[in-house]
Amino acid sequence: MAVTLKNVKEHLHIFHSVEDDYLMSLLEQSKSAIIRMTGVSEGAEYDELVLNRVRFAYNDALDEFERKYQSLLLGISSTLLEANKGVSGGDDNGE
Image 1 (cartoon, one colour):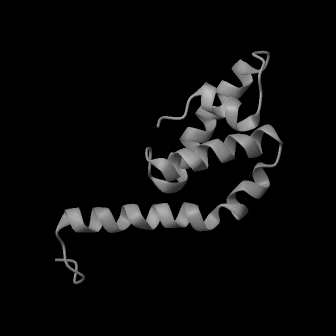
Image 2: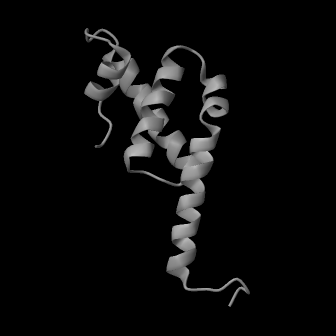
C-alpha cells in the first residue's frame, strides 16, 4: 500500500477536511524523512513508519519518534544493506 491522505486520516481518526493541506504536508515530509533515515521507499514497514511519523508530527512529538522507532528504523536499514551486499557480488575481502 502506498500511504495516502485517506490512510493518514483513518490512522489519526480525523473525519473532516479542514486540515487536509496540513496533513498532506506532514505526509510528504514523513515519506522523505523515512527514505532519508532508512533508504527504503516501499513496503509494509515503510508504510507503518510513515503513518506513525505523521502521527508524532501531528501531535508535536517528533523528538520522540526516532527513539520509539529506532529498532525498526535500524532493522529496515540493515535489511537494505544486506540486500545490496548480495547484489554487488563482492565478498568480505572487498573483492
